[in-house]
Image (cartoon, rainbow, N blue to C red; front, side, top):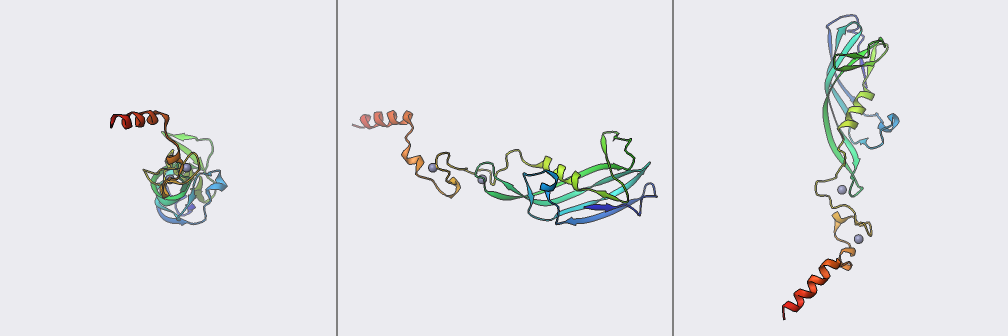
Length: 173
Ligand SMILES: [Zn+2]
Ligand SMILES: [Zn+2]
């Protein structure tokens, strides 16, 4: 999504507000393969002319992602929202301003796609889970254990328990 800054480009300290929705953004086109959008990406924020060709963009984003559960491999959706704060400059000499990196832009539009995708990618859980207590797949037969037990568990008797069962049986006599 693009912020058109033509109205504030020549006015230091001026601010424009934006409420934008993007339904087309494709993370894979930017090299992000671990998530897809399950809902439009919504941005609510503002751009301020900081003078000297620098523009500060702040705001919040909101969307819903389609992820793959790391245990059962099913897809699930995860609502996600966050804040962004970034500086954009049209002169490539300045790379940082204080703590913030200066992203480059040219013309009258600031393209937020790369920034938003990298923020979202950073916010992803390391091991996405469809639910906290997802039981995953049986390592033997691949059955999704969330949908019920498979027969592997009954057939395999742990050798440690086999002896215990024997002793208990004798003790009952
Ligand atoms: Zn799962
Ligand atoms: Zn099994």
